[in-house]
Amino acid sequence: MIRHIENLFLAVFIFLFSSVLQAAAYPVPSPNQSLIGAVQYTRAESTDNVVTIAKRYDIGFNAMEGANPQLDMSKGFPVGSTVLLATQHLLPDISRTGIIINLPEMRMYYFPEGSNQVLTYPIGIGKIGKTIPITKTSVVRKVVNPTWVPTKNIREFNLEQGIVLPRVMPPGPDNPLGPYAIYMRIPTYLIHSTIFPESVGKRASFGCIRMYESDIEDFFPSVTKNIPVAIVNSPVKVDWQNDRLYAEAHPPLEEHDDSYDSSLPGIVHQINNKVKDRPVLVDWQMVSYIAEEQDGLPHEVGMVIR
Image (cartoon, rainbow, N blue to C red; front, side):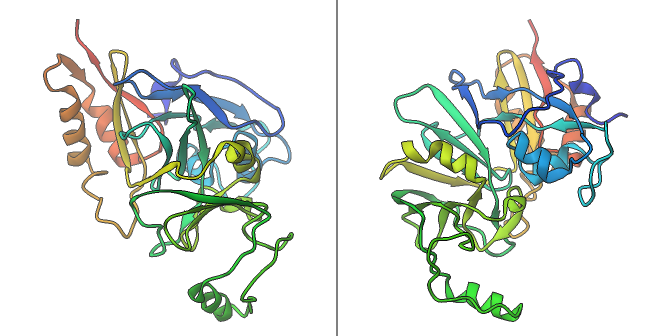
């Protein structure tokens, strides 16, 4: 079975060779509809690797790796090789307001107040055991050119690596927060830019949410105090688009007991909840594939029978 063959007739097959793209913005789907974006493809150029293509199309390392198992993420990509771009998503099943951070997906969704748009961005998250709390919170302030005050455990970790961190690091090119920081009501956890763009789409921080600088710069001006922030743990998303049912699975967070949610029985349970009282033909073979591969792509798994 050729991976993703089921998408070839539905995908928007585009070969794009542009510079860094702006963050994706989409009209908010109507209630009970959740699919945004479209799958795309590109061809690798002579200097391309996972980082160059991920930044160009505003996706994270995890999305590149999940969608392209045939490519070696540790090396440059062969010239002319086809790269699948994970630029289609199901919205998390939560109130569509403010900022939503889905940790297993390593992706943020932002619903600007007063608009009917949703913006989506890839993110880096905390290392295993250093995950930001899964909770609802809100923005308290934002800072341009922030000062970094590393916590005790960050200083101790770096000291073990032979790196002595200052107690306070002023703004500048070595400041890991980069030029933008958004502070929430959860102490010590920030949404910020990063001087390590290769960490976006990875578990690399001590709990903070890392973003490409161009991404946070894009939505930073519209973020205001008290905007709600929902931090969720949804490795599997199942929802409708018109009369077609889609499922999207991501590897679960290792330290959270969500293995059932991302297992075949867990996905079947979610699907059954979505299709009750509706005559739906479900492709259970595709459901099994999604549970096994967890490739981070929305797949059509059912349709209403008329």
